[in-house]
Amino acid sequence: MANGQWYPPEWPDRIRALAAGSLTPVTPKRAATVMLLKDTGTGPVVHMLRRRASMAFAAGAYAYPGGGVDPRDDRHVGWAGPSRAWWADRLGVDETAAQAIVCAAVRETYEEAGVLLAGPTPDAVVGDTGGPDWEADRGALVARELSFAEFLDRRGLMVRSDLLGAWTRWVTPEFEARRYDTWFFVAVLPEGQRTRNASTEADRTVWIAPAEAAASYDRGELLMMPPTIATLRQLTAYETAAGALAAALGRDMTPVLAQARPEGGEIVLSWPGHDEFTQHIPTGGAPA
Image 1 (spheres, rainbow, N blue to C red):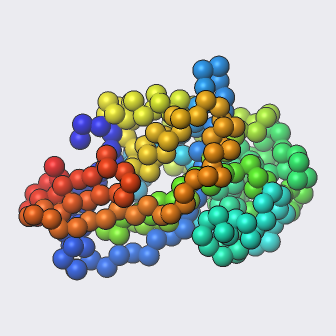
Image 2: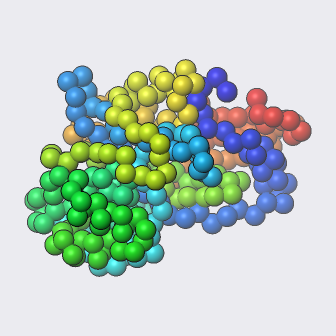
């Protein structure tokens, strides 16, 4: 590959199997990921982590904090910002699922970056979460010994859903062995909080300008999955973190799902609206 596109070696065979009807797609698991932004003197930067080489999915790829919805994420929690009904309409799901997806976004950002989008009142957000007592709770969340609802209740906090903006939605291709239906959110780093590499799945974290990260991808220096580089390119249009958050309201949330179709002796793999990721896979060879 001339750039840093993540392309697993098993994809061609799985794509051919799907096209031949011998592969049954796995049902995707719901997930959420957050593009956490902060301003610098030259524009906004985004928090990214590099997945450990030992990871079964997207090893070595740069991504944003995120992960799957916990079955307990639909438990009642304190809530501030747009209603669950509003989020249901925005995310294209029912109210129970909407809360679970938003909670997953907030929980995963705390678990993987140490940043918590929650507060004691609808117009307040917690400050520094780096103390040992916070770390103990974060570890219990990661280990699933503590539900997110229990964590919030214990600390007298409510989810600040107004600090999140729904940006886009991508569904893992049908030929993938591990599939996710992922909602991408944008958020601004709350004042007084700071990120850290709190994830057991990452070996490096970085604050980087979206344009710089995209250029590094184009040079083949940073490995990324299609949704990651696509969203980075979209973020380059904004001069401030707040500007990107405000723009989220107008974003199209139609799911992006890769399509694999036979065409003239090859299989064409494409992502609608994202021509740069198109691959041509010979029926008996490697992708072109």
